[in-house]
Image 1 (cartoon, rainbow, N blue to C red):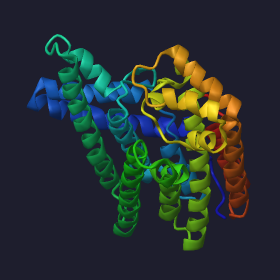
Image 2: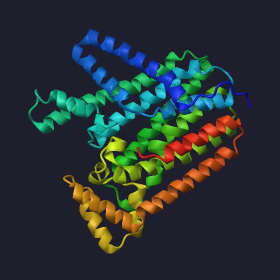
Image 3: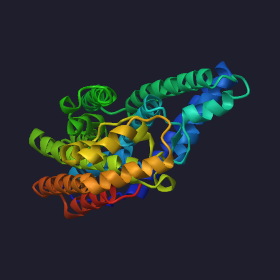
Image 4: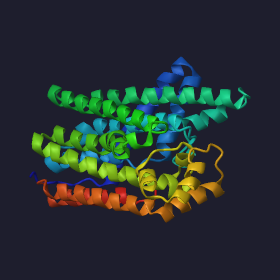
Length: 358
């Protein structure tokens, strides 16, 4: 293994990535203003959302994995690491439209910002939501395109550029499939939906597998090591999504910055709900079935829903699954040759990703 010079932590990675992202938005705000000030407003709204939150885990994973397997400077791949965050923001914006959510990171998302912007102009609430969601779809499209632009800005040698675009393209292809499965889970026959498959394709692949494999492949690792790293990323990514499933129902909105009733209103088919369905009594099922998917759900009804899920043992079994996926991920990590400092950095990130309240 190569000797590590100064191993980045997540704050140091953010200090590299955020200026690159800011520069990207400033350039495009200027270009958009030349077309029309209203277009510049859309870019400014995206920048507001970027600044509002995001842990920068995905860019950090690319930089950390790259450092773990080669001793070259990380600066040439900062644009590629930054592209991971643009892809993430793009998917969040589109996901919020799909979920009919108007809050992200504790602030108005793009739909939410535009709903307020259009309020003096469009009095009909349904029509206004249509127009605000339309703006959000355009924003997500722009960031998806922008993520590829940042990859190209890295100016890597042709072979590395081919690797980067291949890995990135696979991420977009896979997450779209996972998102579709998630959408259809709300009305497909319950026992034909696999929540773990959704977690794997919708979250684990682009959030963990892609940034890890990107950094590893650009560092020049062999196929076997890349495969083992992908397995590590998949397991920790599934665990990460299961934590999200719990937070989506039991989390504090003040901490997560997201609604804790939306998943109930949208009848999200998650591992948590699968565990409830598999183990609930008839009485518990009747209560939950009456609330699951109810659009005008009250906070009191949401608390009843939580109480019944808790009593059924669904939350506890989901937590056990999180522990099992995390344990398997760490066992895989232990078998991959790397520097002790790098291994500790990965272990720390695992802990941070799983033991969280937002």
